[in-house]
Length: 151
Image 1 (cartoon, one colour):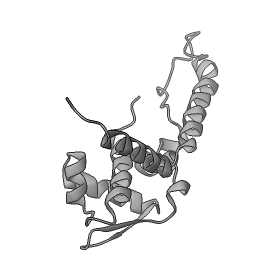
Image 2 (tube, rainbow, N blue to C red):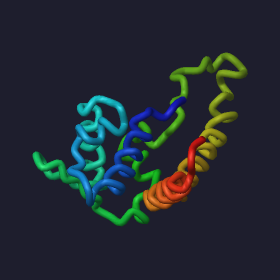
Image 3 (tube, rainbow, N blue to C red):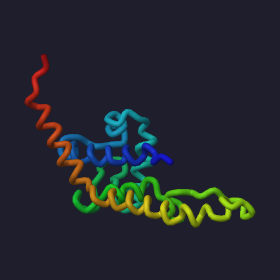
C-alpha cells in the first residue's frame, strides 16, 4: 500500500498558494514549476480539491482561494479529496480466501479488526495536522535559513 504522490502534491499546492498569493498569480503553470511536474497533473489535482469544496479556482485568471481558514483544513481533508478510499476501506482484502483451508476460512477474523484499527489510527493522525501547520513550518524553515551563511 502506498498513498499516491497526488497527496503530497496537493499539500505543496496549498503551501504555494499560501506563500505566494499576495505576490504572484498562482496558476497551474506557476505551481507546476515549483512542484516540477506537468501543469496537467496540477489541474487534475486542483479539480479534485475544488470538487471537495476545499478551494475555488477562477478560470482564466489563475486565482486560487481557500474556502476555509488554514486551521480548518486538515491533512485528512486533503487526503479524502485526493485519494479517497474505496468503500471506506484503506486495505483491500483479497477476494475469495479458500473456505476449506483453516487459514482461508479464518483470515478475515484474524485481520479485519486489526486493519480497521490501523486505518483509524492513520486517519486520526492525519486529522491532527492542518494547513496552518504547513504555514508555521514554512515560516520556521525560512526564518532559520535566512540568517545562515555558507562557507
